[in-house]
Length: 121
Image (cartoon, rainbow, N blue to C red; front, side):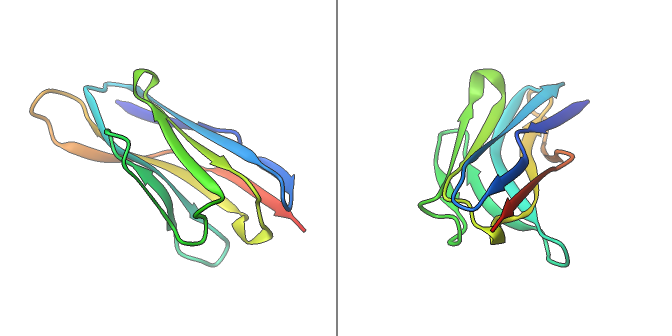
């Protein structure tokens, strides 16, 4: 089986920084795209940033210039560096990855359990 385990959330003041990490483990043959999503209370889950296996990135307009996504393929880990945080960034942040468990196997979408990020004003 495959697990995604997130870490790094917490409480920070506006203007501060946090770094989220998400490590994939288990039956992993290959990982395609990895990404971060977030869900604020009463709102739908939304894309924050994604990164391909080759390092191509895309970001939500609301975080461009403030957040940076990166990955360490050797460690099956994706990171989200969050700078200049705003109260509107408050949400549960979820890690997502497309993972194949064997040669010729389909890529399935896996989710982490979520980590809370709270930005106080």
